[in-house]
Length: 120
Image (tube, rainbow, N blue to C red; front, side, top):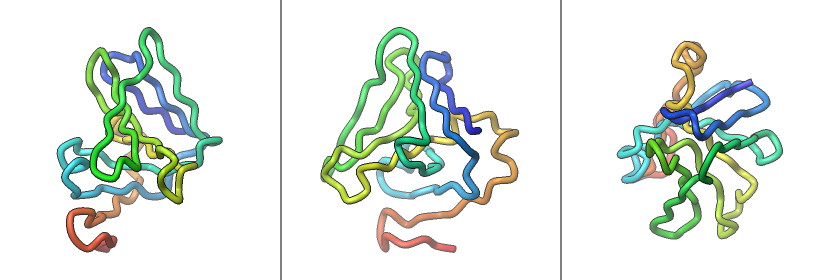
């Protein structure tokens, strides 16, 4: 199982299994968030909130809703908006996981700023 949680603990995101790889993208938004993404199908992910629901942010083509905690501001995951072919995908920001749980996971670097290809 994978557990990601915002700083204040108000948002918890769990997945049925740990990923074999995570993706670090250098596009204009992912680079600012400093996110490392683990990708899942919606059925594999549970999002729990205490208090308020997540707030979302869309930009550009509006294909993705970036979810963040309304209290501490941590960005926990993203979901598709239905405008893209992979609308069933949920990406969990593994920077919200315990670092010890992620130590053996391979990081893949994705060039979302230019070539739209993996660099490894």
